[in-house]
Image (tube, rainbow, N blue to C red):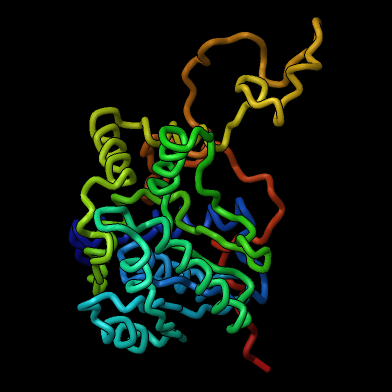
Length: 319
């Protein structure tokens, strides 16, 4: 038997790595449960295409049953290719709904020339998607934010908002009626870029904010890319920090009872250490892989949930 070409092996490793990263996030946060109807928000960008593609793969093999419906919000941006997403979704046989709302005109009318549009656009889009999820009877709303988006949000809140706050992998929606999930929470953006090229997704650019080169999020994104290039492992370590929060060593009196601290009291995370010695991050392994190309996990999950990466039991068809 002839060996598989190198590029095919690399593609298989990438696909397996993404499946496992998404599966791990789903398991760790119990994102998907039996009987769920998941609304996958599809923007036409690489991230949401990859999200839908990987969830479909898991849906085909998972030991639980859940359904998917892709939803795109057509914001009536000038030149938006309305045919691209319906043609793609019909070609792969996915249930979908295109919601038409002219938020573009609203944003342009309300905001002054030169102001960034992302905040208002996001709020308008969020309300429409919540309404649509309710109309469709969906139990979960899946968004395509990845690991780098989560870290960028943390730095945006630190630098410009004065908060230690990121983008959670799972949360209750603003109106309290939905669970929002981010199954790509453990996925690296550079892997999504490679995956989009491999799958040749019909990418649709967002022209609404494409002319805003000085967006704060873009500046933060460039900073993270620079760090990732110059300091391998730093991004992994920072994301691991989001999963290893030590309230007693911060300064939020709502999270830790500093006023009631007494002599002789033993703190869960130790005493007055200014800097912890270096350890291998618990969730990540700085790119280490096993022989099958899977990222090595240092800490096994202790949560008792159904493993979505497990194979679906075979049915006995002998009657």
